[in-house]
Length: 182
Image 1: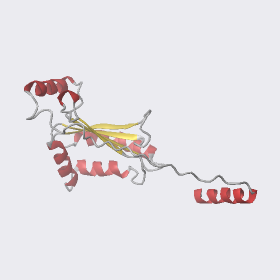
Image 2: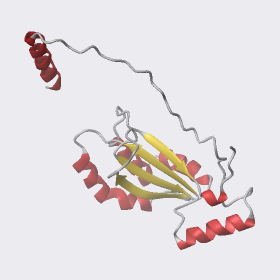
Image 3: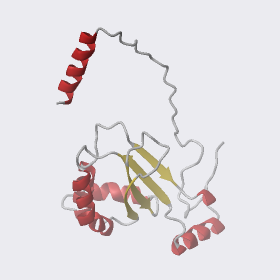
């Protein structure tokens, strides 16, 4: 249908005899943020001072630090699936959080109501890893046949629009224990 609409508009334009503006091409100026400014390390293990480790532990217990490592996925969902996705989240989000493997916490899926990042997608899913074991535990659990978490993980990801160019992933760690390279 959309293809037909375009053809109809194109035919009308040709029949009208109006001049068509020449297309313009501008050079692309890509910006790639690779995270090469900070070292990646576990803020609660070796390489951090006892004071930093105590700060992180206390901050996590008091709830003002979200976690040792935070991963934020940005994405769009498949067209026309918002209501179905909302229903899936209502029915399954608590199960997903409750079945997460050790050192992994699912912190919810959110819609973006305001952002300066136009290419990051409309939805955000937040994961927290309590240690460097977290990502490994996650990968093992997702691969485990018969795992409730693996089933829910795959169902969640089925809603994501793999054809959309609007995707992102941000990884965060506490600034108070960071090591800056430059």
